[in-house]
Image: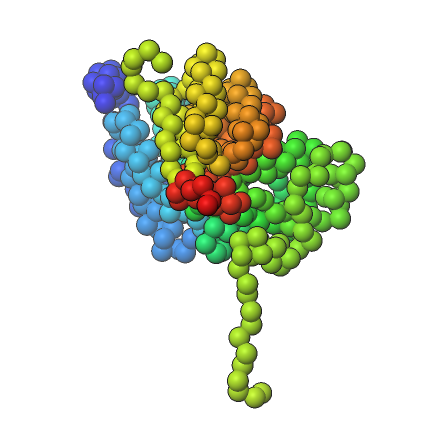
Length: 294
Length: 132
């Protein structure tokens, strides 16, 4: 906001005078220029994800915001608008090049109208463009940066969600936890898994944990060692770990790289692992006799 | 320990000794703890020992070694030791540094430790009365 007085003083200079003349011109021909701009957008097949009505509403607000920034030199309101717009259009799959494209189109449309207006006075045209171009570029920049920022925010949010989902610790019975691992286990995920498992043991007072890696295609040496350490650490907290679903490939890898698995309790599949866990905990699961004849 | 708050409290519960470590011990304090505890096993004719380290956020190699030594000595004096309350971060750090608890059994907390001893027949709610 501190910049505001500077802009005011700038506008009282010759450049400022030109800008206000410029803004008046753009306001005067608003309908025509906006229409021209919309046509150009349609011609270049940008923003196809939006309906014509939405497009008309958005182009109006973008146009007004654009002119306002040219007038005041203050991009804050535009930033807000761009952020808000990005929030709405990102989920609909609008790409960066489209957003940048339409802003550049508007810049060109307006520049053309300036050429037209000042075509008889070349030096005047030059001066007007000198005032117009930096402001216009700044606007294009602001919109693009706001859009990309918003996209990155969405991506970060999704990454967090994926990370949280990637290592669920599920209590199945009292004192029995299951950790299904789906997808590639890298060292970052392995570290997280350990953290979640150990705090899960504490929280659920687990005595037996079944780690099922049926859904994990491969592990490397450091992850395998990490897994062994996790099993040891769980034991220190009084829980025993059963690993199930080792694929032939992983079994081969583990034996080849020579990870010491002698202390690991491994069982072929999740079903077997659960049965073993129930045995360790003293559960007996029996099927209820069905009295009705089928 | 010369005055100040107790660093370790050793309590008797039936035939079990419960040693609760309140704060990180330095090496000489560890040696003293080892000494006290092993002494008391004989005094109370204990059959089980529970060492609760829930208050510790770090267990160094000497502490781990001392805990293993205590367990070995207790076994020689007829008591089974269980280590309880190791914090998640401590557990993983110990494993990463390659210092396990050896053959000393571990349990989640005091309650689990008592249950484990009871399972193995080392804990009785009251001290064993001499059989007539």
